[in-house]
Image (cartoon, rainbow, N blue to C red; front, side, top):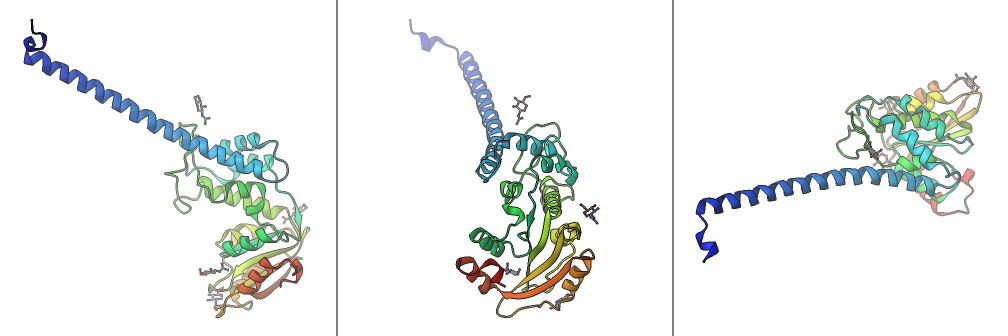
Length: 276
Ligand SMILES: *[C@@H]1O[C@H](CO)[C@@H](O)[C@H](O)[C@H]1NC(C)=O
Ligand SMILES: *[C@@H]1O[C@H](CO)[C@@H](O)[C@H](O)[C@H]1NC(C)=O
Ligand SMILES: *[C@@H]1O[C@H](CO)[C@@H](O)[C@H](O)[C@H]1NC(C)=O
Ligand SMILES: *[C@@H]1O[C@H](CO)[C@@H](O)[C@H](O)[C@H]1NC(C)=O
């Protein structure tokens, strides 16, 4: 008897249909699983980066899991446009900023140059060199309502909404960083733009306002200039900065060329204080 030959075309078509359906269902399951896995891996990878950077940071690193927990509770499960700066209060409490007298360096529109300098020379410390600042520098994150995951894509951008997780973090952290400033503080501002001080910047809106005259003695602006400076220390925006400072905080401004700062970055023999 010939087996195959006796099957009706009808039965064969049904078999093909079943096989196709099963294959399709399997494909869908595989795709769903790998999408889920990728999302989970994205979430886990962010946490690993956070904890890895936290542990790498010199000093007290025993409680990076706690710090992660305090951080995640600020935004996980929340609408990513409804995370106010105060959501990070418990995080700041879990990883407090350490007072740094005479070494605090603020910056606005000079990020690359400032960090090139502060990384090579130990004279000054920026927010990005604090524990929380170094852990979160350059990262994007957000949560979603009804989810306990951390997302690193599809998050609102800096200006999409005021209370987004990234912007609120930097606002809150900048306030905490300025709160512990003491002695003489320095700010590197950009002399190649027409208004080196902007009251809308984090520096202008938050940091300058939090400096407390009971602890801070002076604000020293280093205005970084290039060959053809656009502006100088007499600029009206810098007068605004001076006016913003609490009574009792002295103000100073000095124009320093970018090449001089680069020289100071690479030449350890120039004492920190003598660079400008
Ligand atoms: C100052 O701003 C200009 C224009 O945005 C930019 O090209 C330059 O690199 C900035 N200077 C520093 C020191 O960051
Ligand atoms: C999210 O919740 C699930 C189930 O409750 C749990 O297994 C998982 O570990 C949680 N993930 C995170 C990132 O907390
Ligand atoms: C400055 O700090 C002192 C002491 O910590 C505090 O009592 C005071 O309220 C602060 N003042 C301002 C204006 O922030
Ligand atoms: C100086 O500051 C004012 C406002 O504060 C600004 O409008 C002006 O263009 C600035 N720059 C120069 C080069 O004058």
